[in-house]
Length: 172
Image 1 (tube, rainbow, N blue to C red):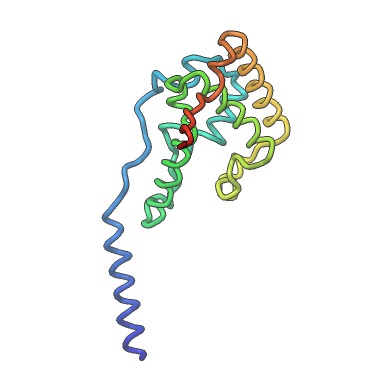
Image 2: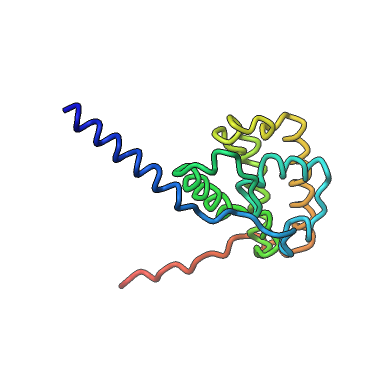
């Protein structure tokens, strides 16, 4: 039995060493995207600081990776986490969203920050500077609300709503 555990441990160690050679692509872009939120909307410096510190690692095309990203399978987990965050909201591609989606995403930012859902607790455990204090939450909420109000004035109300999918006609 002892020999079995020794071989099993050796096999696990070899597998761990082997997976170190398979690394996912990093989320790093050169410069600021033409579709970045800052290219179409004014972002005050205090809000920009909050976004960079607390949001951009998962919600932009440029992630600052921690040292432990060099260890597999952690890098795969982080890549999946960042990909999922970017699918939900990507500040680097915000200008490419249709206006209704921009409007809705701004509302979601407000809700999730207010409810303490963002930034994720798993992220702030390691990145303590990403935790938002009340002043930062208020600044972010004020900016989001002002931005949503300006969008609401500029665009017709029906363009700010999610398009309804046609309902199938019931069979007779």
